[in-house]
Amino acid sequence: MIRLRPTSKPACGRYNDSMNIPLQARHHPSGRNAGFTGAGLSFIEYIRNTEEMLRQVHAGKPDIEKRVNGNVPFAWQPMGDYQKGNEKPYRRGVLLTHGLSDSPYHMRYLGDFFRCNGFYVMAVLLPGHGTQAGDLLDVRWEDWAETVAYGVQCLSEMVDDIYLAGFSAGAALSLYQAHNDERVRGLFMFSPALQITARARWSHLHRLYSWLLPRCTWLNVMPDRDIYKYESFCMNAVTQMWRLTHALPQGELRIPVFVAASADDATVIAAATLNFFHRVQHSLRKMQWYAAVDPQRADVEWVKSALPEKRILSSAHTAVVIPPEDAHYGEAGEYANCLHYFARDDDHYSACQASKTVWLGEVTPDNLKYGILRRLMYNPHYAKMEASMRSFIERLP
Image (cartoon, rainbow, N blue to C red; front, side, top):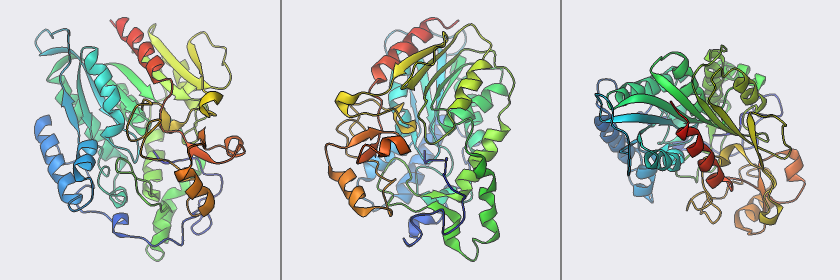
């Protein structure tokens, strides 16, 4: 998910550091991915149709198999011992929902964890995602919510007990669904996007002048080198995220909830996650909180985020759901997130991409003072998070 906490007013030409980079084909809609198209389909048919759509959009691009496999929805049966349902094939199932600008690739490790712990697993691809950044220009948050509702309905045909797991915007969508669906038995939330900057409320105003200045449709224009998430980010995505967060019910939640989040999150307002956790009125609730300082709360498991010996200054919004061994985003991964330097400082951008001795962490003013900083894309405490989740699952009703 792209950063949604700007430090200045989102005025076209002033807010965007990449204004001089020309728009390209990827910054326009593909015409194939603006809304949810799975209504009336079985989940297997939905996967097949989505895969075909992805192959059409990515035809001729390098690494097309990696692109398709990382962006396509999936359904996995549980491995090893698992409980059968009363009248369904499985007792427990979980629907995974990725974040804004991301893809199902970001949920695959969680999916593997859940199926190894007895869950039937489904993961959706949100409309506007997985193809090209321009497909977020016309999407609505209601299209995302419809996709999650569809996934829950498909999951209900396979399992007795439905759980939802979401990353960032996917966590917000999971929460929205849980408040409106009594079938949901519990939530797993990772870097939840429950509140973003108040400035986002004005992001829709670009429509007043972007017909004349198309560049103002975009918050930023980036290289889009990552094959599993967009780097360029349009104003409509901010608008829809703002509307989603304001559609979330603010009442109590009376189901089990597991949360993992970073206090240093530069994408969303992390304090909103702590406030939300107060409203969970169930005896089974657990939070793993990555921070420099212990919050001194009995209901929160503190994980010290800084690891100086690994040159890690803090956790990051982008890091929570990916383990260090991931070949793309991990400790020795092929992708380096240096977007905070792009079009601002070419020397720093090149050094961040190439150097093996950069600092890692969230993109904060304090962290940038240490020198060349690469945004952390993996969770060095991932195994600890899985152990905490496993303990949580063992206590589920």
